[in-house]
Length: 229
Image: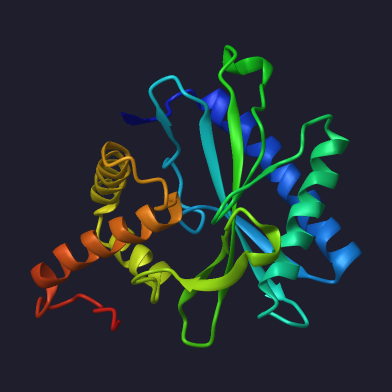
């Protein structure tokens, strides 16, 4: 079962190292392929949401948001550019090539000296944000034959104005509810052996659940600045 990671030294060094990797990835992606991207820890920078499944490797999940690309609909090209750039950066740190899954790119096990041999992965989900203010994930649907594979942008369910909702929840002192929901949702999918729902999707579900639960309690109360979603 998932639990929140409490080793603050490990978290700090893991995030610092991973941030360095992602910065190098964005730089390589821009220099070699002219693709502009930004990255952030899942939850739009939300803190204290890093989880571990028992003593298994820790997954540090990042969104790599594409913000500049000549052909945003050429999903195969974008995925390959990110994959190749990621491998270039990993090689600089004497790390093995990443694994390419349906909705993410994942590094092999990484070990830090302060971790008591606890390994972690850098898990990258390629995303974009359209004019409709919704988030999309880049999906690589594999068939077993490369030439038959398909690549496409898939809308992240109920992702509209997710940052505004998160800010609203924090403003009303209900962030602990998000932490509880997020952990519950991750464990629910784990118990169902469901690997399709990424941490990003779990986070969106948690935010929407908490936002929808507190919104009726504050509607019509004087002094509240109600967020229009």
